[in-house]
Image: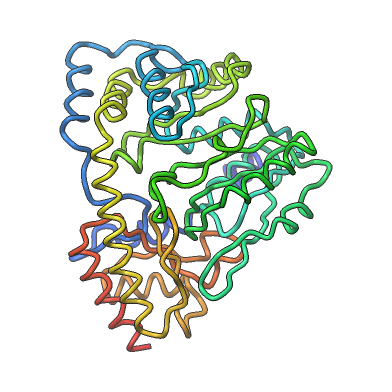
Amino acid sequence: MSFIDSLSPQARLAPESGIVEIFNHARDREGLIPLWAGEGDTPTPAFIRDAAAASLAAGHTFYTYNRGIPDLRRAISDYYARHFGRVLSPDHFYVVGSGMQAIKLSIEAICKPGDEAIYLSPAWPNFAAAVDLASAAAVAVELEFVDGRWSLDIDRLKAAIGPRTSAIFINSPSNPTGWTATEADLRAILELARRDGIWIIADEIYALYYFNGPRAPSFLDVMEDDDRILFVNSFSKNWSMTGWRVGWIVAPPALGQVIENLVQYSTSGVAEFLQRGGIVALDRGDGLIRDNYEKALKSRDILCDALIATNRVETLKPDGALYAFLKIDGVEDTRAAAFDIVDKTAVGLAPGTAFGPGGQAFLRACFLRNPAQVQVAAARLVDYIGRL
C-alpha cells in the first residue's frame, strides 16, 4: 500500500484548488497583474502593523484566551453596533485563525458525519471542501443567471432541503458572483431554516462592499435572538489583512464552551500580537474601509465597462463583493483559458471551473486594486478577447 493509499478518504479526495493552481503557475510572472485572488494590492497600513509590532516588542508571545482577548472581542462588538445597528455583548464573539477556520469550525460544530450542508453555487470552493472533510455532504443549489444577473430561486433551495440537512451556507454579497440577498431573500431563507431546525452559516465578509447602499442586507436585520445562525467573518478584506489569518465567529453565547473547545483542539488560539493589530483595525480603521470601498467601486466600473463594451462578454456590474464574474463568448474551457490569458497577457484570472456547479463557463477577476492598474488589465483583456 502506498503512502497516499494509506490516508483517510477525506484527505485523499480533498480537491486541489483551481484558484491556487493558476496562481502557482504564474505568480512570479514579469508584468503580472494578479486579479485571481480575493485581495487588494495595498499592504496592511502602518497604524495596524505598528500596533502588532508594539505588542510583539512588549513580549505578548504567550498562550492567550482561546476565545480571543477581551479587548478584541469588545472591539468586534463595537464594530457591529456601529455598522449593523445591533448591540451584541462580547460573549457572542470568538476570535479564530482566519475566516476559513471560522467556516471550518462552524461546520464541525453543526455537521455530523452523513449530514448534508446546502450552499449556493457558483461559490468560493472552500466551503464545500470543508464539508467533505467533515464527512458530511455539500449540496449545491445553483443560482439563476439571466441577462448577466444572478438571482436565488427560493423554491429550488426549499426543494434541496432533506432529512439530513443540518446547515445552509449563505455568502452574501457573494464570492464570486456578486449576488446579494435582499431582505426578502434573507427572511425567506430564515423561514426555511426555522421550519426544519436547520442552522444557517452566514458569511457576510463583504457586507460593507455593497454598491447600492451603506451596507448589504444582513441576517442581523431580520433574525431573533433564538435563531440558529453562526456568522463567519475575517479581517482580510476590510482592512487589507489577508496574510494575517485572523477572523471571528458570531454565535449564541450558549455555544461558547463548544466553540472554545474546537479552537483549543485546532490552534489553541490566535497570537496576542496579531489580535492587538485587529483591535486597532476595528477601532481606527473605518476610513481604511471607505478607501478600499472607493477603490473597488472605481475599479469595478473601469473593468466591467471595458469588458461589456466588447459585446463579447456577458456580465453586469455586481451589486456587491469584489469580483467581476464574466462569461466570454467563444470560451468553453475556462481552466484552459485562464492559463492562456495569463501566458499571453500577464493578467491573472481565476477559472470558473473552480467555483462549482453553474460557474464552469465563467472567469473571475478581483477588482480591489489601483484603478490605473485595472485600466491596464482591462485593456489587455479587451485586446485578448478581440483576437479570439
